[in-house]
Image (cartoon, rainbow, N blue to C red; front, side, top):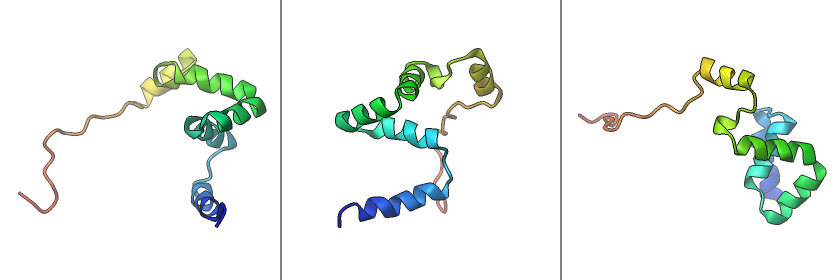
Length: 89
């Protein structure tokens, strides 16, 4: 079957219309060592940015990005501890 299933899955991913950089950041996050080395050689500047973002709180590199995060509350909200299940009392 080769990479047929991967091809089908790529169709689903592309329906969300992610940017090229979004896809590269996702590849860097998921790649094994050999594939990461290939990506790193192909896009060294973007790889350095990925590492820098990975090592900063919430990936913000500038004060402007941090302000954007703060303004839009891009923090994970905590779910209620004892949330009732639907249909049950």
